[in-house]
Image (cartoon, rainbow, N blue to C red; front, side, top):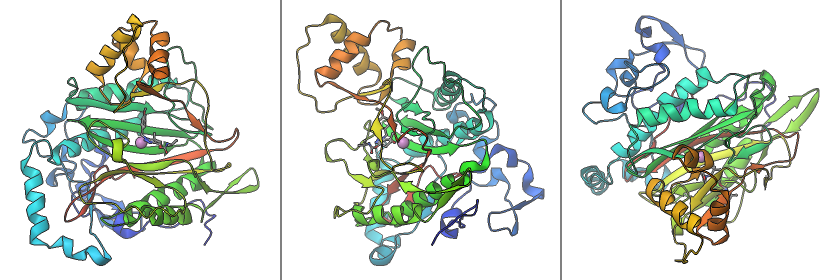
Length: 429
Ligand code: 57R
Ligand code: CO
Protein backbone atom coordinates (compact mmCIF):
# COMPACT_ATOMS: atom_id res chain seq x y z
CA UNK A 1 0.00 0.00 0.00
CA UNK A 2 1.31 3.41 -0.88
CA UNK A 3 0.10 6.64 0.64
CA UNK A 4 0.92 9.68 -1.38
CA UNK A 5 -1.69 12.09 -0.11
CA UNK A 6 -0.57 14.72 2.33
CA UNK A 7 -2.45 13.18 5.20
CA UNK A 8 -1.68 9.46 5.06
CA UNK A 9 -4.00 6.92 6.66
CA UNK A 10 -5.88 7.49 9.85
CA UNK A 11 -3.93 6.03 12.73
CA UNK A 12 -5.54 3.03 14.40
CA UNK A 13 -8.46 4.27 16.44
CA UNK A 14 -7.27 2.28 19.41
CA UNK A 15 -4.11 4.34 19.48
CA UNK A 16 -5.89 7.64 19.10
CA UNK A 17 -8.67 7.05 21.58
CA UNK A 18 -7.24 7.31 25.05
CA UNK A 19 -8.38 4.68 27.48
CA UNK A 20 -7.97 7.10 30.35
CA UNK A 21 -8.20 10.87 30.76
CA UNK A 22 -7.07 12.78 27.71
CA UNK A 23 -4.20 15.16 28.12
CA UNK A 24 -5.88 18.11 26.53
CA UNK A 25 -3.97 21.19 25.58
CA UNK A 26 -4.44 24.33 27.61
CA UNK A 27 -6.39 25.88 24.76
CA UNK A 28 -9.25 23.48 25.47
CA UNK A 29 -9.67 24.40 29.10
CA UNK A 30 -12.92 26.17 28.46
CA UNK A 31 -14.20 24.12 25.60
CA UNK A 32 -16.70 21.97 27.44
CA UNK A 33 -19.57 23.75 25.76
CA UNK A 34 -17.91 23.70 22.36
CA UNK A 35 -17.92 21.03 19.71
CA UNK A 36 -14.55 19.87 18.58
CA UNK A 37 -13.90 17.94 15.40
CA UNK A 38 -11.98 14.78 16.09
CA UNK A 39 -9.55 13.07 13.73
CA UNK A 40 -12.25 10.85 12.31
CA UNK A 41 -14.14 13.89 11.09
CA UNK A 42 -17.07 13.22 13.45
CA UNK A 43 -18.11 15.88 15.85
CA UNK A 44 -17.71 14.93 19.45
CA UNK A 45 -18.14 16.84 22.60
CA UNK A 46 -14.85 17.26 24.41
CA UNK A 47 -14.87 16.64 28.10
CA UNK A 48 -14.00 19.41 30.44
CA UNK A 49 -10.32 19.16 31.19
CA UNK A 50 -10.63 19.50 34.94
CA UNK A 51 -12.80 16.45 35.48
CA UNK A 52 -10.29 13.87 34.35
CA UNK A 53 -6.94 13.22 35.94
CA UNK A 54 -5.09 14.01 32.76
CA UNK A 55 -5.37 17.63 32.02
CA UNK A 56 -7.00 19.52 34.78
CA UNK A 57 -3.34 19.69 35.53
CA UNK A 58 -2.77 22.44 33.08
CA UNK A 59 -5.22 24.73 34.76
CA UNK A 60 -2.92 27.13 36.50
CA UNK A 61 0.10 26.57 34.29
CA UNK A 62 1.68 29.75 32.97
CA UNK A 63 3.16 30.72 29.62
CA UNK A 64 6.06 30.22 29.51
CA UNK A 65 5.54 27.24 31.84
CA UNK A 66 7.00 27.92 35.28
CA UNK A 67 4.59 26.33 37.79
CA UNK A 68 6.08 23.22 39.39
CA UNK A 69 3.93 20.11 39.08
CA UNK A 70 3.71 19.60 42.85
CA UNK A 71 1.58 22.78 42.86
CA UNK A 72 -0.72 21.41 40.17
CA UNK A 73 -0.92 17.91 41.67
CA UNK A 74 -0.78 18.47 45.42
CA UNK A 75 -1.86 14.88 46.12
CA UNK A 76 1.16 13.55 44.22
CA UNK A 77 -1.01 11.50 41.87
CA UNK A 78 -0.09 12.12 38.25
CA UNK A 79 -2.13 11.21 35.16
CA UNK A 80 -1.81 7.75 33.75
CA UNK A 81 -0.61 7.46 30.17
CA UNK A 82 -2.57 5.78 27.39
CA UNK A 83 -3.38 2.17 28.25
CA UNK A 84 -3.17 -0.50 25.55
CA UNK A 85 -4.29 -4.00 26.39
CA UNK A 86 -2.01 -6.94 25.74
CA UNK A 87 -3.19 -9.12 22.89
CA UNK A 88 -3.14 -12.70 21.57
CA UNK A 89 -1.38 -15.05 23.99
CA UNK A 90 -1.29 -12.38 26.66
CA UNK A 91 -4.95 -11.37 26.96
CA UNK A 92 -5.10 -13.27 30.28
CA UNK A 93 -2.82 -10.64 31.85
CA UNK A 94 -5.59 -8.03 31.80
CA UNK A 95 -7.57 -9.83 34.49
CA UNK A 96 -4.98 -12.10 36.13
CA UNK A 97 -5.16 -11.87 39.92
CA UNK A 98 -1.45 -12.65 40.20
CA UNK A 99 -0.55 -9.85 37.79
CA UNK A 100 -2.85 -7.41 39.55
CA UNK A 101 -1.06 -8.21 42.79
CA UNK A 102 2.23 -7.47 41.03
CA UNK A 103 0.85 -4.06 40.03
CA UNK A 104 -0.15 -3.30 43.60
CA UNK A 105 3.29 -4.29 44.85
CA UNK A 106 4.93 -1.98 42.32
CA UNK A 107 2.81 0.92 43.54
CA UNK A 108 3.89 0.42 47.15
CA UNK A 109 7.63 0.78 46.63
CA UNK A 110 8.45 4.50 46.21
CA UNK A 111 11.42 3.75 43.97
CA UNK A 112 9.32 1.56 41.68
CA UNK A 113 6.04 3.42 41.68
CA UNK A 114 4.82 4.66 38.33
CA UNK A 115 4.26 8.12 39.84
CA UNK A 116 7.93 8.94 39.11
CA UNK A 117 7.70 8.35 35.39
CA UNK A 118 4.14 9.78 35.19
CA UNK A 119 5.33 13.02 36.77
CA UNK A 120 8.17 13.16 34.23
CA UNK A 121 5.68 12.51 31.41
CA UNK A 122 3.29 15.25 32.54
CA UNK A 123 6.20 17.70 32.60
CA UNK A 124 7.04 16.53 29.08
CA UNK A 125 3.47 17.16 27.81
CA UNK A 126 3.26 20.62 29.33
CA UNK A 127 6.71 21.70 28.15
CA UNK A 128 6.17 20.44 24.62
CA UNK A 129 2.73 22.07 24.38
CA UNK A 130 4.47 25.39 24.93
CA UNK A 131 7.42 24.48 22.67
CA UNK A 132 5.03 23.71 19.79
CA UNK A 133 3.44 27.14 20.13
CA UNK A 134 6.60 29.13 20.74
CA UNK A 135 9.16 27.64 18.33
CA UNK A 136 9.17 29.73 15.15
CA UNK A 137 11.55 30.24 12.21
CA UNK A 138 13.95 33.09 12.97
CA UNK A 139 14.78 31.81 16.44
CA UNK A 140 18.33 30.81 17.30
CA UNK A 141 18.84 27.18 18.30
CA UNK A 142 20.20 28.40 21.61
CA UNK A 143 16.94 30.25 22.36
CA UNK A 144 14.93 27.14 21.50
CA UNK A 145 17.02 24.95 23.80
CA UNK A 146 16.66 27.46 26.65
CA UNK A 147 12.92 27.79 26.12
CA UNK A 148 12.49 24.04 26.53
CA UNK A 149 15.02 23.44 29.28
CA UNK A 150 13.94 26.43 31.43
CA UNK A 151 10.43 24.99 31.31
CA UNK A 152 11.57 21.47 32.18
CA UNK A 153 13.72 22.61 35.12
CA UNK A 154 10.85 24.64 36.57
CA UNK A 155 8.05 22.08 36.10
CA UNK A 156 10.03 19.08 37.31
CA UNK A 157 11.32 21.19 40.23
CA UNK A 158 14.90 20.32 39.43
CA UNK A 159 16.73 19.03 42.47
CA UNK A 160 20.20 17.49 42.31
CA UNK A 161 20.02 13.97 40.93
CA UNK A 162 16.44 13.50 42.20
CA UNK A 163 14.66 15.30 39.39
CA UNK A 164 15.68 17.24 36.32
CA UNK A 165 16.53 17.11 32.65
CA UNK A 166 16.85 13.51 31.45
CA UNK A 167 19.21 14.24 28.55
CA UNK A 168 20.22 17.23 26.39
CA UNK A 169 17.37 18.58 24.29
CA UNK A 170 17.81 17.17 20.80
CA UNK A 171 17.18 19.83 18.14
CA UNK A 172 18.52 18.03 15.09
CA UNK A 173 17.79 19.71 11.76
CA UNK A 174 17.01 18.34 8.30
CA UNK A 175 19.42 15.52 7.31
CA UNK A 176 20.58 15.25 10.92
CA UNK A 177 18.40 12.81 12.82
CA UNK A 178 19.71 12.86 16.38
CA UNK A 179 22.28 14.06 18.93
CA UNK A 180 22.51 17.72 17.94
CA UNK A 181 21.98 20.41 20.55
CA UNK A 182 23.71 23.81 20.33
CA UNK A 183 27.11 24.38 21.94
CA UNK A 184 28.10 27.87 23.16
CA UNK A 185 28.61 30.22 20.22
CA UNK A 186 26.26 28.33 17.91
CA UNK A 187 24.81 30.79 15.40
CA UNK A 188 22.29 28.57 13.62
CA UNK A 189 18.89 30.19 13.10
CA UNK A 190 15.81 28.06 12.43
CA UNK A 191 14.55 28.48 8.84
CA UNK A 192 11.00 28.03 7.61
CA UNK A 193 12.14 25.22 5.27
CA UNK A 194 13.71 23.27 8.14
CA UNK A 195 12.61 19.91 9.53
CA UNK A 196 13.29 20.04 13.28
CA UNK A 197 13.35 17.00 15.56
CA UNK A 198 12.57 18.01 19.15
CA UNK A 199 13.73 15.27 21.55
CA UNK A 200 13.04 16.09 25.19
CA UNK A 201 14.09 14.10 28.26
CA UNK A 202 12.71 14.53 31.78
CA UNK A 203 13.58 12.37 34.79
CA UNK A 204 12.20 11.87 38.28
CA UNK A 205 14.31 9.69 40.58
CA UNK A 206 16.15 8.44 37.52
CA UNK A 207 13.01 7.37 35.67
CA UNK A 208 13.47 9.00 32.27
CA UNK A 209 10.59 9.99 30.03
CA UNK A 210 12.07 10.05 26.51
CA UNK A 211 9.72 11.39 23.85
CA UNK A 212 10.23 13.28 20.61
CA UNK A 213 8.30 14.91 17.77
CA UNK A 214 9.08 16.70 14.52
CA UNK A 215 8.19 20.26 13.54
CA UNK A 216 7.91 21.77 10.07
CA UNK A 217 6.63 25.17 9.00
CA UNK A 218 5.71 24.33 5.40
CA UNK A 219 3.60 21.46 4.05
CA UNK A 220 6.30 19.89 1.82
CA UNK A 221 7.28 17.16 4.28
CA UNK A 222 3.88 16.54 5.88
CA UNK A 223 3.85 13.02 4.48
CA UNK A 224 7.29 12.26 5.89
CA UNK A 225 6.00 13.24 9.32
CA UNK A 226 2.86 11.14 8.87
CA UNK A 227 4.95 8.13 7.87
CA UNK A 228 7.11 8.34 10.95
CA UNK A 229 4.20 9.00 13.30
CA UNK A 230 2.37 5.97 11.90
CA UNK A 231 5.51 3.80 12.12
CA UNK A 232 6.05 4.75 15.76
CA UNK A 233 2.42 4.01 16.58
CA UNK A 234 2.68 0.67 14.79
CA UNK A 235 5.79 -0.17 16.83
CA UNK A 236 3.99 0.77 20.04
CA UNK A 237 0.96 -1.34 19.14
CA UNK A 238 3.18 -4.32 18.32
CA UNK A 239 5.26 -3.99 21.50
CA UNK A 240 4.31 -6.16 24.47
CA UNK A 241 5.51 -8.80 26.88
CA UNK A 242 7.06 -11.67 24.84
CA UNK A 243 7.01 -9.66 21.58
CA UNK A 244 10.09 -10.36 19.43
CA UNK A 245 12.29 -7.34 18.69
CA UNK A 246 12.93 -8.40 15.09
CA UNK A 247 9.22 -8.61 14.32
CA UNK A 248 8.59 -5.15 15.71
CA UNK A 249 11.32 -3.84 13.37
CA UNK A 250 9.57 -5.46 10.42
CA UNK A 251 6.21 -3.81 11.23
CA UNK A 252 7.88 -0.45 11.70
CA UNK A 253 9.62 -0.72 8.33
CA UNK A 254 6.51 -1.91 6.54
CA UNK A 255 4.47 0.99 7.89
CA UNK A 256 7.17 3.60 7.28
CA UNK A 257 7.97 2.50 3.75
CA UNK A 258 4.33 2.49 2.62
CA UNK A 259 4.64 6.29 2.30
CA UNK A 260 6.26 8.57 -0.21
CA UNK A 261 6.89 12.31 -0.37
CA UNK A 262 6.68 14.62 -3.36
CA UNK A 263 9.37 17.29 -3.38
CA UNK A 264 9.70 19.70 -6.28
CA UNK A 265 7.82 17.37 -8.65
CA UNK A 266 9.95 14.36 -7.68
CA UNK A 267 8.48 11.43 -5.76
CA UNK A 268 10.82 10.19 -3.02
CA UNK A 269 10.34 6.96 -1.06
CA UNK A 270 10.37 7.25 2.73
CA UNK A 271 12.96 4.93 4.26
CA UNK A 272 13.30 3.62 7.80
CA UNK A 273 16.75 4.61 9.08
CA UNK A 274 18.43 1.22 9.37
CA UNK A 275 21.11 2.05 11.94
CA UNK A 276 19.03 3.86 14.55
CA UNK A 277 16.88 2.13 17.11
CA UNK A 278 14.49 2.31 20.01
CA UNK A 279 15.90 1.11 23.31
CA UNK A 280 15.22 -0.02 26.86
CA UNK A 281 15.57 2.60 29.60
CA UNK A 282 16.70 1.81 33.14
CA UNK A 283 17.08 4.18 36.09
CA UNK A 284 19.57 6.96 35.25
CA UNK A 285 20.49 5.24 31.98
CA UNK A 286 18.92 6.26 28.74
CA UNK A 287 20.23 3.27 26.87
CA UNK A 288 19.40 0.21 28.93
CA UNK A 289 22.77 -0.32 30.63
CA UNK A 290 24.53 -3.67 30.45
CA UNK A 291 21.60 -5.72 29.29
CA UNK A 292 20.08 -3.05 27.11
CA UNK A 293 17.90 -4.10 24.21
CA UNK A 294 17.50 -2.30 20.87
CA UNK A 295 14.45 -2.15 18.62
CA UNK A 296 15.71 -1.70 15.07
CA UNK A 297 13.53 0.11 12.54
CA UNK A 298 13.95 -2.53 9.87
CA UNK A 299 13.14 -6.23 9.54
CA UNK A 300 15.79 -8.38 11.26
CA UNK A 301 16.31 -11.75 12.87
CA UNK A 302 16.58 -10.66 16.49
CA UNK A 303 14.55 -13.26 18.42
CA UNK A 304 15.02 -11.44 21.74
CA UNK A 305 11.69 -10.83 23.48
CA UNK A 306 10.37 -7.89 25.45
CA UNK A 307 9.79 -8.70 29.12
CA UNK A 308 7.47 -7.73 31.95
CA UNK A 309 8.54 -4.63 33.82
CA UNK A 310 10.71 -3.18 31.06
CA UNK A 311 10.60 0.49 30.02
CA UNK A 312 11.15 1.18 26.30
CA UNK A 313 11.71 4.26 24.20
CA UNK A 314 9.84 3.35 21.02
CA UNK A 315 11.19 5.73 18.43
CA UNK A 316 11.32 5.63 14.68
CA UNK A 317 13.14 7.77 12.17
CA UNK A 318 12.24 8.14 8.51
CA UNK A 319 14.39 9.65 5.78
CA UNK A 320 14.10 10.80 2.19
CA UNK A 321 17.79 9.95 1.76
CA UNK A 322 19.82 6.75 2.06
CA UNK A 323 18.16 5.70 5.32
CA UNK A 324 21.52 5.42 7.09
CA UNK A 325 23.18 7.88 9.44
CA UNK A 326 26.84 8.62 10.03
CA UNK A 327 28.50 10.69 12.74
CA UNK A 328 28.98 14.23 11.50
CA UNK A 329 29.81 17.64 12.94
CA UNK A 330 30.79 19.05 16.33
CA UNK A 331 29.94 16.90 19.32
CA UNK A 332 27.60 18.31 21.98
CA UNK A 333 26.30 15.14 23.72
CA UNK A 334 28.25 13.04 26.24
CA UNK A 335 27.53 10.47 28.94
CA UNK A 336 29.64 8.67 31.51
CA UNK A 337 30.20 5.04 30.61
CA UNK A 338 28.32 3.09 33.25
CA UNK A 339 30.72 0.23 33.85
CA UNK A 340 33.95 2.00 32.88
CA UNK A 341 37.06 0.43 34.43
CA UNK A 342 38.67 2.48 37.17
CA UNK A 343 41.45 4.46 35.49
CA UNK A 344 43.73 6.66 37.58
CA UNK A 345 43.73 10.12 36.03
CA UNK A 346 46.93 12.10 36.05
CA UNK A 347 45.47 15.15 34.34
CA UNK A 348 44.15 17.30 37.22
CA UNK A 349 41.62 19.12 35.05
CA UNK A 350 40.16 15.79 33.95
CA UNK A 351 39.91 14.59 37.54
CA UNK A 352 38.09 17.74 38.54
CA UNK A 353 35.75 17.61 35.55
CA UNK A 354 34.91 13.99 36.35
CA UNK A 355 33.95 15.06 39.86
CA UNK A 356 31.55 17.62 38.41
CA UNK A 357 30.08 15.00 36.07
CA UNK A 358 29.64 12.49 38.90
CA UNK A 359 27.95 15.05 41.11
CA UNK A 360 25.58 16.60 38.59
CA UNK A 361 24.86 13.91 35.99
CA UNK A 362 26.15 10.54 37.16
CA UNK A 363 25.28 8.33 34.14
CA UNK A 364 22.65 10.74 32.73
CA UNK A 365 23.66 12.23 29.36
CA UNK A 366 24.82 15.86 29.41
CA UNK A 367 26.00 18.47 26.93
CA UNK A 368 28.62 21.19 26.89
CA UNK A 369 26.03 23.89 27.70
CA UNK A 370 25.29 22.11 30.99
CA UNK A 371 28.97 22.30 31.92
CA UNK A 372 29.03 26.00 30.97
CA UNK A 373 26.12 26.81 33.25
CA UNK A 374 27.81 25.01 36.15
CA UNK A 375 30.66 27.48 35.76
CA UNK A 376 33.08 25.10 34.06
CA UNK A 377 35.28 26.79 31.47
CA UNK A 378 38.10 25.69 29.15
CA UNK A 379 37.18 22.09 29.86
CA UNK A 380 37.45 20.70 26.32
CA UNK A 381 40.91 19.19 26.73
CA UNK A 382 39.82 17.52 29.98
CA UNK A 383 36.57 16.30 28.42
CA UNK A 384 38.38 14.86 25.42
CA UNK A 385 40.80 13.17 27.81
CA UNK A 386 37.90 11.47 29.63
CA UNK A 387 36.61 10.31 26.26
CA UNK A 388 40.06 9.01 25.24
CA UNK A 389 40.38 7.19 28.59
CA UNK A 390 37.08 5.36 28.03
CA UNK A 391 35.37 7.04 31.00
CA UNK A 392 33.00 9.25 29.03
CA UNK A 393 31.36 8.40 25.71
CA UNK A 394 30.95 11.12 23.09
CA UNK A 395 27.82 11.06 20.92
CA UNK A 396 28.34 13.20 17.79
CA UNK A 397 25.36 14.23 15.64
CA UNK A 398 23.95 11.39 13.50
CA UNK A 399 23.13 12.54 9.97
CA UNK A 400 21.93 11.10 6.68
CA UNK A 401 23.36 12.43 3.38
CA UNK A 402 23.18 16.16 2.56
CA UNK A 403 19.86 17.26 1.09
CA UNK A 404 17.93 14.42 2.72
CA UNK A 405 15.24 15.19 5.28
CA UNK A 406 14.67 13.09 8.40
CA UNK A 407 11.82 12.97 10.92
CA UNK A 408 11.32 11.32 14.31
CA UNK A 409 8.43 10.45 16.65
CA UNK A 410 8.99 8.73 19.96
CA UNK A 411 7.18 7.63 23.11
CA UNK A 412 8.21 5.95 26.32
CA UNK A 413 6.18 2.85 27.16
CA UNK A 414 5.96 0.66 30.26
CA UNK A 415 5.31 -3.06 30.04
CA UNK A 416 3.26 -3.29 33.22
CA UNK A 417 2.18 -6.76 34.41
CA UNK A 418 -1.45 -6.29 33.33
CA UNK A 419 -1.32 -3.58 30.67
CA UNK A 420 0.98 -1.59 28.39
CA UNK A 421 1.14 2.09 29.36
CA UNK A 422 2.20 4.69 26.77
CA UNK A 423 3.39 7.06 29.42
CA UNK A 424 4.17 10.09 27.24
CA UNK A 425 1.03 10.00 25.04
CA UNK A 426 -0.68 13.36 24.66
CA UNK A 427 -3.38 14.80 22.47
CA UNK A 428 -0.68 16.13 20.14
CA UNK A 429 1.02 12.85 19.17
O1 57R B 1 16.96 8.87 20.74
C1 57R B 1 24.34 11.13 25.17
C2 57R B 1 22.06 10.81 24.60
N1 57R B 1 18.95 7.51 22.61
C3 57R B 1 20.81 11.38 24.57
C4 57R B 1 19.71 10.61 24.25
O2 57R B 1 19.96 5.10 19.18
C5 57R B 1 19.86 9.28 23.94
O3 57R B 1 20.28 3.80 17.55
C6 57R B 1 21.12 8.71 23.97
O4 57R B 1 23.10 11.62 24.95
C7 57R B 1 22.23 9.47 24.32
C8 57R B 1 20.81 4.56 18.27
N2 57R B 1 22.12 4.81 18.18
C9 57R B 1 22.94 3.97 17.32
C10 57R B 1 23.98 4.81 16.62
C11 57R B 1 23.52 2.85 18.15
C12 57R B 1 19.71 6.44 19.29
C13 57R B 1 18.54 7.02 18.57
C14 57R B 1 18.47 8.48 18.91
C15 57R B 1 18.34 8.77 20.42
C16 57R B 1 18.91 10.10 20.70
C17 57R B 1 18.90 7.67 21.27
C18 57R B 1 19.45 6.58 20.75
N3 57R B 1 19.74 5.74 21.71
N4 57R B 1 19.45 6.33 22.90
C19 57R B 1 18.63 8.49 23.62
CO1 CO C 1 14.79 10.07 22.47
